[in-house]
Length: 223
Image (cartoon, rainbow, N blue to C red; front, side):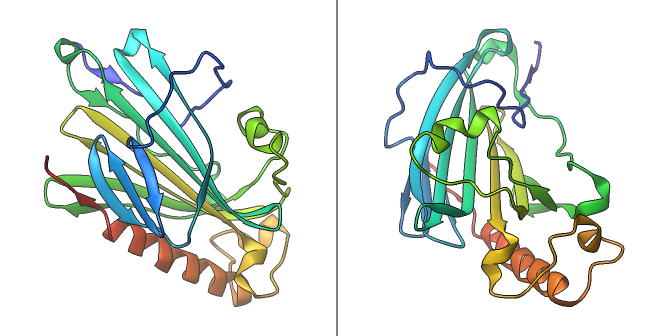
């Protein structure tokens, strides 16, 4: 049986021929993210609100991918962003879902790449510095709703796991570096992993702590 190879990291051009998403598929209750399929929960660092969602079919991969965007804002400006992608296998005969390993935008500003085991579940994750791009095509549905996406550096954590070969989950959580209450540099070179220090290191360490706590909070719920 051929395996399904899901490239979750590429959202690409937004498809307007979307499939309606049920509120029960994925929702946030306070700081708790609750997924219905696959059934799991995780505790988020902040309270987010849903701003956009869509899904698209992948006939060649025998799967359908659901994408959800959540934000935390100060006024109309994004301070934190949460993107959830879930791929569901649609043809059991095609074999289990397989995902490629997580890759940073650049090794120079990637601080950690590791795995965490929770029972039979293996969670891959990385933490890096990245730049929000308000001109990105994938973010335009958010911008069109009047939400301001600043052209700022942000710390981002990515985690992904495959559940029983039926579902692949990718979570990307990012936070503006200016939102931590400390004066930090906007120069990317200062944030490189070989030279990060001072307030920049304090901000990274605080982000790392909250992101690892989020990973540790994942609970798969049997149905």
